[in-house]
Image (cartoon, rainbow, N blue to C red):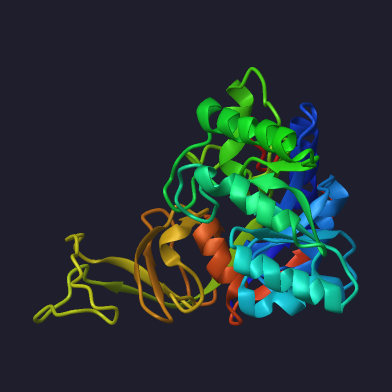
Length: 361
């Protein structure tokens, strides 16, 4: 079966480098594990690297990590009203933007004799989750009336749905909201979570980070890049995850199909380039396993296309044979689907690092 080989040492090293980098300005990190299905070994590597929180959007993933013995402050990134009781029981902090959900969390916190912590998400332009700034005072006022909740801080999300980049303007605006709310309500907002892996360029160029003291990082730790332009962050490992697939057919075939072209299995009408006769190999890997479009060959292969269960590749420089293994690097979308697939084996490699094998200059 296809497999992903995972270097826990590289993930730990990425977490360490980023923790030290952002820590210079007093910014703590939440290690985001949603792309790796809450894999406990990866969460533990992040913690060893210095992240202070483990964050995930799926309650089931947090339950999996806790059951495996991972010890951390767990943060739920996506809060659903229907899961309120389980959230209070399982997680330490949840991100919220709906007062009805907060009322339910408070109700169950009282029932379980707990005080649940929340981070209020503020809409800063990306149009995903968040309370509109004009409604923020009313929202905080109502939240403070719920005795079994504690406002741990506020946060925002950028560069996900709307693709809005973090910059001095929106980071300054978030800091100003913090100052205003603390003064208005005489409260202390401890965690100011200014964003995610997209905040790297802002951080590197900002003269001051203001009140921002936390970031939620997944892709930077896992894949070694920022997410505004997918540029490699200097010093980070980019091949902590490697996907391997087996060649199950290798033949010389025409490059153009014969017959009338109709829709393929996914409803698209394919277009082909005339390459003449050439060697084509089929891998035991398909769209049911991974988002094939996000794979990058480490063997100078070109991916010609894929179906549910097969991926077709070609190479001018390598004579592929049945039984050969081909390895790929993955982008974030491919990592997400591959780690979620039950058809891909996950192999943990805790071993020593070769510090010059794949690190950015």
